[in-house]
Picture 1 (cartoon, rainbow, N blue to C red):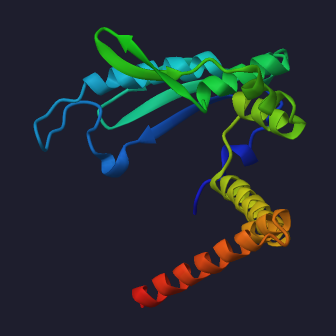
Picture 2: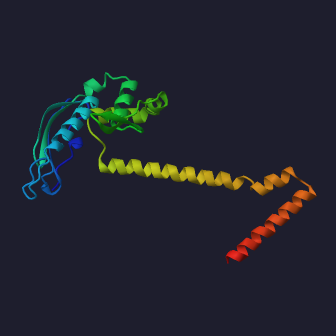
Length: 213
């Protein structure tokens, strides 16, 4: 039987310390000495440490200790909802942008090109600051947990439903708008030269369809 999710055990408003463990897929040795191939992947441990630094710098979660082994790693974490509660809306928006940027820029480091989050504009920040529901959800995620698979699917369904409604509305508006020939004909009402041009154009299009068939 699967264990309960931490979200069902801990109170998100309380400070909680946890010890987490995660293993690589099929216990492959992706972070150190691979006994099967004889290869060494210790350089990936630096990637792992750099990522931890980035996450710890933006989340309201203390990284108390960590250990990265060849096929798994350990983290000792402490949630800090009390710290996140002191952040204003702009601080929350900036931290979330650093974690989930909509745009990135290329940056040169030691002769290598890496992509880092672009500086957010006021419009980017307002997408979070002006949405109280989204802002509250982000505050919770920064200090407690990321959404579950079910919650992500629910959000995705809402987005798809919104896109469908938007598309249906656009189709309804386009159906109500007169076609280009109707609009043009209204501007040249009763002009014999224009009527002749339309007639020739229709005949040309009709002949092209017959040739295609």
